[in-house]
Image (cartoon, rainbow, N blue to C red):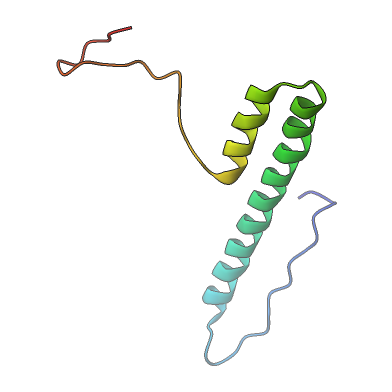
Amino acid sequence: MDASRPKISIPMYSERKPRRYLLALVGVLSCRRDKRNLIESIARREAEDAAKNNDLRALYMTTRKVCGIRCNPNRPIRNEDGTVLT
């Protein structure tokens, strides 16, 4: 386990919320935190480098990646028969 990550404490057991629910909640919260840290690191590292180098294409693709917009411009185009056109 990474030493820089704060440890998540599991709340006390209660009658309304069983322990497995609380463990699942802790898992969800840690996944959200990890995803947030990943997006922030991508934005910090790639977007700032692209902005420093005046690379607008890389900056545009990085901002789309951070926003969650998915597209693959390198996918081949196929016709109705399924053969690759270009």
